[in-house]
Image 1 (cartoon, rainbow, N blue to C red):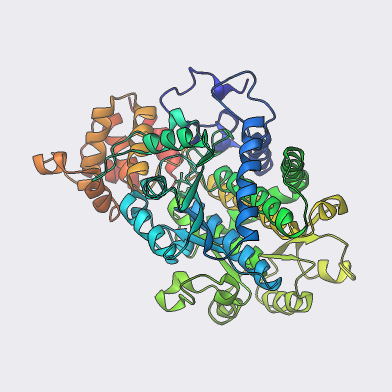
Image 2: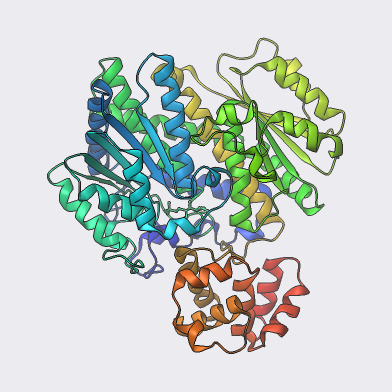
Amino acid sequence: MQHWQHSSYEPYLPVTEKSNPITRDIDKASPKEIVEMLQKCDAEIFERTSHGNPMYQTLNSSSVVQTIVDVSKRVEVILKDPEDSLIVLSGCGTSGRVAFLLATSLNRWLASHHQKQIYSYIIAGGDKALLTSQETPEDDPLLGALTLGKACVGKKHVLFIGISCGLSAPFVAGQLDFCLRNLEIFTPVLIGFNPVDMARTEPIQNCSFHFKEVAERMNEMQKQQKAYVLNPAVGPEAISGSSRMKGGSATKIILETILLAGHEAAYSKKAVTFNGILHSLNMFEKVHQITYSQTKELAALVQKAAISLRKKGHVYYLGWQTLGIIGIIDASECIPTFGAGFEDIRGFVSNGFSEMNNKEGDLSSLGPHFIIDHKDFVDTILPNLSDNDTVIFLYSENDDLNEVSVLAKNVRQRTSNLHAIAHELKGLSDPERMRSQFMTVLTIKWPSSLYKHSPVLMKQYWELSTKWCLNAISTGAHVLIGKVYMNYMIDLRVTNSKLYRRAIHILQRFTGSTQAQCETALLRAIYDVEELSDEMSSTDVTQHTLVANKRGRVVPIALVMLQSRRTIAEAKSYLDAYSVIRDAVAACQRLL
Ligand code: S6P
């Protein structure tokens, strides 16, 4: 049995918030060890058995596979009769980004096959949340329901797939509740990675239900095949709670398995079967093995990225097609995850917003966070590029390699610190010429067995593989520059209720103080006062998070206060002496 599966292991936390024993010492690891730890953590997605622990189902458990079969058949029905029908994928943060990626890719596929485009995506906070962190709308169930209602006006059949890795987002709970009250139109599906028993029970503001209550109603309805819950446990995240990693990857795997099976049944007359689904899941496990077979090369990129960040340089991902979008997503998530500066790691995609194909169109007028085209990189970044910066190209043999070469040549004039992650299937016609353009190339060679299983899915495999590589690079680099303590990101931004609860838990974990003491210290740091007024103590979590959004280092400040009984001013000046959170916390641990 995995250590985290024991009932005594962090019993008050759901799987998605537990700390992973594999990465306990990630903050002291070498780049190669970091990549190996991430490889093991990601391998847990494909764990075959729950080792007799009835509490957990895995991705390969027959009940999970059967639910995938059932949902795939729903997809098939909608694809065969697309009039007045819709498949909506929805979530917050990373879950919404995965929803976007799949909905747009599959609509494109449908359009190219002269079929009606029936996919739609919803991300809490709208399209700007695709590129920036918008954590506040995640707490709003009414907004979730309203957005869903609007997206489905006039539709008679809607398959709604709500994603919340932690079974926690009120935005998604509101949507599922809306579906459950309108089952004549909606078939709701919930994807997440905790047992229903561990779904969030915190009351939601202005709302009569919490997440667990909705998930239980979903479970009830599943008996009549009117709703479906897909919630295998895939183990805790490598960085505690960071569901952009395993949560995002597992969501992508499940959704692609479901949607591809539905497509094949509708268009290739290949019936959805239990074994077919199992086989698809096995193929994704191969993608994991192939990607991580190059630990050394990947570790070298982690190291390069860390050196750049340490020297106050930057990391740039320049990707083609959806690989570019994967790069943009990974880069933008570093800001909320590691408190990174927006310039630290940035992504660019060929053809910018026309490649994104997002609902709200070109967002570049919203500001620098939304400048994503290669052309913008050439105009604004290239002139100041230096050897302190690491540039990583992301492409496959299906891309315009001449275009890749031209851009590589331009970049080389400014820096030799240019690398590539390249996906090859049949092999390039002139591999040496491509290789010579970069300092290093991590070539991922794909066996034809995967292509034969599904030519349609190759692009999705490459996306997932690139996601794993980039998650390793950006996480590893931030770990190496000291942003993480053990496997906790302590300096988190407390911008919604989930993060507020996580912050309190982290404080309890490291100080041994009571929940009440930790909450008080956190609130003092948020409101920047020594003494809380009655109004501050009695106001709701939403208000706290709105104030916290404007403040930095609230959790480290609260930690120092709790640990050393210092005033806020003293705690701040104590922290000023440390640029590395890991050092500050370690020193603080020694204070008592
Ligand atoms: C996690 C990421 C967050 C989550 C979001 C939704 O690394 O930063 O934005 O995706 O909070 O979480 P969930 O559990 O509802 O999918």
